[in-house]
Image (tube, rainbow, N blue to C red):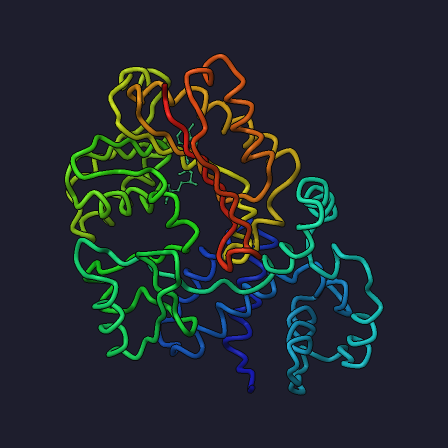
Length: 395
Ligand SMILES: C[S@@+](CC[C@H](N)C(=O)[O-])C[C@H]1O[C@@H](n2cnc3c(N)ncnc32)[C@H](O)[C@@H]1O
């Protein structure tokens, strides 16, 4: 595969933004592609894939690279992908044989799997024998999965529509609204996306709304709604009948929910900012269902967001664990007696998942709830993202 200097510079600048200016990989890639509208599909694919893969393998590539110079880092990555390097001045100083020898000499798992030492220790402690396989899977590229908007089209009809656009998909077993793309590609440019026929959403994430057992006409609160991915799914299951209060502490995220709802033809979503605990108390016993899709470490979605592993720390995980416990303790008040509450994370750590639910159930407020069902979704077992879903009933 031939390298082009303008796109390689694009990759190098993006990596610089991510590691030296602390920017998020997805945002940097989006900006890079937006400011170069003339690049074709192949160039865009090269940029996105190279940036994500270098971020994913950052620790390993840096150990193998002759220096920290970003061209050396890129060149090393390129050789490790099995390609040859052109004779550019920027790549001088990279000896393919030395790169190979340095790579062969590495034996420790955190370097080979390209994760921080503390994370490897934490994973081993919390997941034991499953950690090694989970880690392997989390370092793979994520499949592109979409959720069919059943308010507008059936799964079969969407599959056929996409096929006419040259996009081949298959329907994974056990996920009734999901389609998986045969080949990675940007779906946001498809006319079917603009018509609101689907959302991009991993198959494991689609299990969350499904676990809430909603029915048309219900009053539902999505208490950590963010940009509304789960609210939209709930609205589709509810056939756009009833009411969904989509709440979050971040107002700007809810604005996005409104836009997405319009595209999806959803009219039952009402965004509401959580200003303080009074917002929660005023909604006492008003909901048939409450969804707590709480903020988390994101360790179940490393395939998709590999930069997470470089941004996290044991302290940041501890902090998010505290917020999760506050949410599960305080938000159940909004649920009616006999109603169902789902606590979900996109993490694989028991400390954010089952241990949180156990802690809640053994607390004073938790006495009023019972655990109905738990799904511990690991990436290497499901083939999709790592997730945790606990279904609780209020007595
Ligand atoms: C995992 S994300 C939600 C993703 C969203 N449900 C979706 O499907 O697109 C967690 C959300 O919780 C919000 N959040 C953080 N602290 C919160 C709190 N104390 N109460 C409610 N939401 C909170 C964050 O702003 C973030 O949008």
